[in-house]
Each structure stands twice: as structure tokens, then as C-alpha cells.
Length: 408
Image 1 (tube, rainbow, N blue to C red):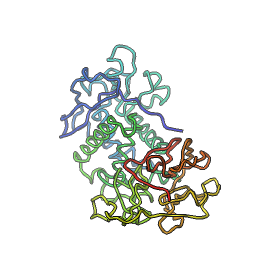
Image 2: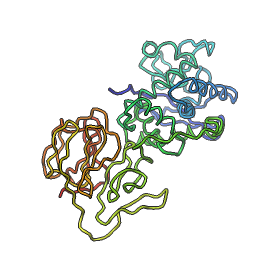
Image 3: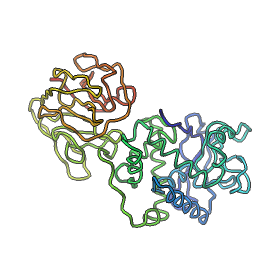
């Protein structure tokens, strides 16, 4: 089951250089860019601080997650921390009455241009389930208050991260909370967090140009809040907890096995959805670059390595024919961890959780052998057509961009 996707039709803003320095953000596909105007938050510095303090208080009171900057970044990107009608111009409509506003709550403009359809998102976090009445029926009138809007946003994001195909697999809810709490701007998991927001909170298709643009907007909006009040305001002096095992970043980063990610030292891995995925088997070994630089396969003329692993089983217990194994073949074991056929001709436990209930149909090995959907599992990886690695994600096979593979 997937979390609902907000369809963002709000012309949000990102605070880029102090209060009042705002720029319009790219909006949903149906928005006519020619109609967009410069949007500005009219929230005063005092109100901005009060709402930031309230976000901190809401997160501090939540026993699960305590990373207030992440939610402040969402609110800043969506509305510049505006909650009430009259605090954002010109792209706003009067929403339902809010006691905290002593008048209408802020409603988004770009659904109906205030022509009476009442379809804009509501409040600082822009909740939108259709019309105002439909949104309130789904989320409750609590979203009309500042604190209710915030607490609902916390739960929505937690649920979205739990159900997303692109966040790391979490064996327990506590693993999810640990992951969220560990995220810091520019650190491990940051790029994946931005991609998750652009996809789940904003509804942009993963990997699309719109998704990339929205990721950048959330990055800008969150960094602005960090720069406005500083690290100590948001986090005090408490260091971030370590990231969960198996999580890798940045998205798209390249690593030799056992050099930042678990795996065969002769394999080159790419971070994909927070999971280290095999991209290439290095014939001449893998080059470990200095910290901050991408690893790579060493050049040379050696023959490609071959691997053959006996006694392997799929997650469902079915035997894996040894003749179908090769370097980089990866499956989920009965213990819910990923195993891959390594250059030592043995199945190696990566200690990366596979989990979930993925089942991918229409798969086949490079030699044409069909892969039964019942044998597939999350993050299973096979060498398929075009000598490309494919990963089982959700219900479909996803090509590992730029990868190369071969069967023995």
C-alpha cells in the first residue's frame, strides 16, 4: 500500500536570502507557467520565529522523530511558513475559518484561481484532498490550526516514508524513525530525503525533470531555514544518530564493495534508493578513490571474472540452479537479507535488508531463462537484456542505469 500523494498546485516559495527574499517554485504540470506571478511570503520575522519554535515543540513532543529542520524546510518551501490568508501574496485564496488566524486560513490559488471551486491546499503544509470540504473530511478540522497542521504533516511524512518504494527498507518502525532522525543537510540520506519529498509529498515522478527541479527547491528551502537560525537552534549540541545499516548516499554515488558500502571488493556499486546495487563486476579490481570522489573499475585487459554459486535459494525456499548464477546475481534470503553471488564462488550476506513484498513479473536472465514472479523479491538483481543489471522494485524490473553485466 502506498501513501497518498499530495498533488501540488500551490505556487510555493523558497526563502533564499533572508526574510522576504523569495522566488516562485515550479508547480504541478497542469499549472500554466505563463499565469504564474512572483509569490511572496508576508510572514514577519517574529512570526517566522514563533512558527519555527512551534515546529520544534511539536517534534520535541513526538516520541518517534525529532528532526524539526526537515519539517521547517517543507513548510518554507511550500508557503514560506505562511498559514493564514493575507500572509502570502498574490497567489492565495481565503480558505475556511481558522481560530488561529481569526479569519480564513491560507488556501492555494492555482487550482481554481479563487473562482469558487475551493480546491486549493490548506494551511502552512498545504493539505489537499480535492475541495476544502473533502480535505477537511479526510484530515479533520485540526489542520485549520497551526499546531494541527504541523502534527498532521509529521504523520503524513512518516507514513509516506514507510510506504515509499524509494526509501530504504525498514524492518521496524523504529528503523524508520532512526533514519529520519539521522538526516542532516548535505549528509548521509539527504539526497534521498529530497527525492522522497519531491515524489511522495509533491507527486513528481521519480527521476523526471520536474522531480529533479522540486528536489532542488526543497534543498534550497531547507538550507534557508538552517542558515536563518543556525545548527544549534535546530539541533542543540546533540550529534545525529548513525544512519541505519545498508543505507548509502549520495543517490547515484559509486562505491567499491567494503569501501563505504557492504559487498564484494571486486564489484562497483551504485546507491539507488538508499540501497547499494551492483553496477559492474570489475575484471581488474575496483579502484578506491579518495573520500568524496567516486570509485571506479580499474582499467586493463583481464578477462571478465566469472562466479558460480551452489546451494542458493530464493526467499520462498525454491532452489536456485547453479547454472543460473553469475557474478552480481542477487536474491533475498529467508532471513530477509540480500545475498549475492561473489567472486569467491560463494553466496555472500550483504547484511542489507531486502524486505517488503515485491513481486516482479516478465523477468528473464540474459540467456533467456524466464524468472518466475514467485521467485522474485525486493532488490533482487539479475543480468538481463542488453547486458544490463535489473533490480526488482515493487512490481516491476528497474534497469540500473549505466550498468554492465554478463552471464558465465
